[in-house]
Each structure stands twice: as C-alpha cells, then as structure tokens.
Length: 173
Image (cartoon, rainbow, N blue to C red):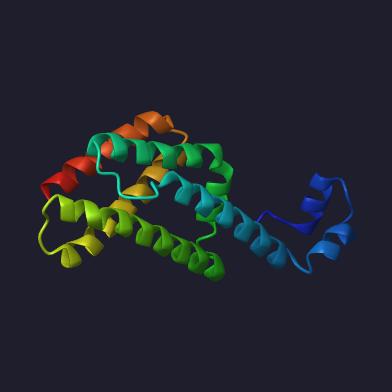
C-alpha cells in the first residue's frame, strides 16, 4: 500500500488530483474505502461457497466441493485477496478481517455441529470450537497457497487435496 498515492490514482483514472480529493479527503480514507469494499466482496464470496444447511451426504464429496468453491472464489478475485491480506498492518483492516473470519467460523460451526451429532461424536461442545478453528486455519492456508503463483494449483486440484486432508483428520477425531 505504500506505493499508493493520490497522484498515481488520478493518473490511472485519467483525472486530476482535485477530482480524487473531491471523492476522498485523504489517501487513508481512499484505502479504507477500497479495503472495505473488497473485504465485503470476498466475505460474500466465501459465504456463498458454504452450504446453507448441513450436508449429510458423501463427506468426501461435500468437503472437496466446499474447498473447491472457496478456492474458485479466491482465484476469481486473486488481486482482492492479495490486497486484503497485505493490509495486515492496518489495525482497522485486521479488525474487519477478524470479524468476517468469526462470522464464517460461526457458519462453519453451525454446519459441523449437526454432522458431528449424527456421526455420534461425544463432547461436541468441547470439540466443535477446536475443529472449527483447525478447519478455518486450513482454509487460510489453502487461500495463501492458491495465491502463491509459484505453487501453480488449480482450485479443483488444491480443493480436492485439502478436502482429503481435512476429511481424513476429522473422521479420525
């Protein structure tokens, strides 16, 4: 973000700096607005990748499909993901990312809890928060791997791989 200037933005838009300042009082305000817009778009994409109710069918299929859907959202909006993840020094951006992550984790927990109950897992209240955090951390790692140009994964390949890893771990928990 250090390279972002009002002058550079004005030039990229083909306008003068006063036009940019008419919309945003400062560089910080512009960057905050940009980050907020991109974070909202990414959050909506992640939520849309999750099933709306617990999938009780083939666990391998839905786990793989879920990660593939997430990673397709990442691939389609890679620049936005890079922008949001690069803003980790911005306190407001970190707080917004944390809030969005917690909302996604709540949705994941709402899906996992009934599946664990159906599978006969004991002490769900104790185990569910740990499993959700592990799941979220693996998702974070998959997103970063998807954004790493050197790794050259497709969303389908990486989603299938991560889905198998997660499923193997959860089925033995």
